[in-house]
Length: 308
Length: 241
Image (cartoon, rainbow over the protein chains, first blue to last red):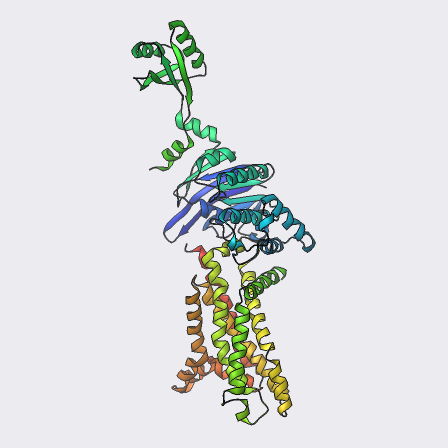
């Protein structure tokens, strides 16, 4: 089910939380929302899930407008809100039954669905405990279980892995990736490696505007322009090596990373450069002890785009 | 309709699981039982087989107890954020309000039903007027419905339960006594208006056994306005955050 956001604007008083955002998410895509605090990620999600109404613009879920048909569009959405609000005084199993019923699952299928979700999220031993007695990680599982209980076509997850331990994070990411094969998933996070690990596409939002949209690779390419290699070449005079490197065909620029240890950063045009460096070293009897592609991290892209 | 009932059931469970329901019922029966039967200025003083002393005491106990019941309903959901979880399910604001409203009314109806032994006792003491007794209970349900809608409204405007409780009492106080007092000090049309606004006047006429359309319109209007403003106040989330 596609999600189409069309010129959505939302203000709180004079402050514009979301400023004329438009994008499209296709079926089977996992999209990550990135942005500093207060950028408008959560507000956008609240509009998609019909908790808030947009001031201007509209959102279409599978072609249906959230303005005209909120009850209809909400049926297809599973939503994990920020901070994962739950009824703490309810036992897990009762709560999931309530969610299943209110999502319109027929009475005779409710039990099977709840059992299924408890199995998937690994809550079997906790199912009779009150939600308030559970640890944060288990509450997060309950939150995910309630979001997925009606097998929705669209999943909106606001910081799904916050408060989980590394094992649980890996589990949840795996779950999201599996779900993302046939469902449309939008998730928001501050954890950048998480987006790289789970998402097909990244939206970077700042001050209510969409400032970048693309796969992790294209964003990285865009930010750095050229590839950088870090090499360490021993058994030679640093200046001689420096000059020799500069003469190579695919090299655009060479700089010292660390003169004392013969380390260089090499900006290059093509992959061919690695072979050229190798043959250069062999020819001069130098020893190549290190060669690492120097990747621009998503952190740097994120900082570059949002820090002004 | 089904969605409303699912919400109602959850609310009722929440009332009973958290003991609020039991405490409320015990206190209600304790207070009204004490003042109806053993306080001295009670049912035996009237020398009539009538439940009117009970009705006027229940009128006061409900006035205090209903805000204590309704204060939780929306204020707590606002505070913990569960309202967002609930409203992003395929339900409307109106269904959520209706579900919570009906749950509270059912709880009050249960408390009132438990005073049924009073009816039997009075019926055995003498010739009780069945019509007056039915009208009395009806009047209690009407004022409960009115105060519950006010309580739901004050609960929707805040995320603090104490604020919800006190503002419900404050608004209730006007209907309960202040309008009547004001109308006493005024003459002509203005006095008439305040007299009409006073809940006590309508409650008295109803519990006397007179079923008048005017009273029904009066209670109906308060209920409608209370629920209407609850819905308006819930929609306010769009303007502030």
